[in-house]
Amino acid sequence: VGLAAITDLATYGSEAGSCNASVYPLMGGTPAEHADRYAAVSPIERAVTVPVRLVHGDADRTVRLDQAERFAARVGPGAD
Image (tube, rainbow, N blue to C red):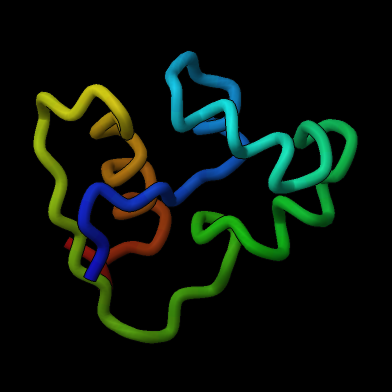
């Protein structure tokens, strides 16, 4: 279960916002500098082998709703 889950670190880090600024320091640089790191840990880049439930409000100003929508579209019927 993901509650307003950050499912794409590369996209999230490039967005403006107070929490977003922590992604690049955490990952040691940008997605262009460390694509392998982002691919290794970003949920949208990982194979999903279990059912996933995403709970996300459409007025969330910290994690945009499209994070959940793009993740659900990528993993298919295993997520809703």
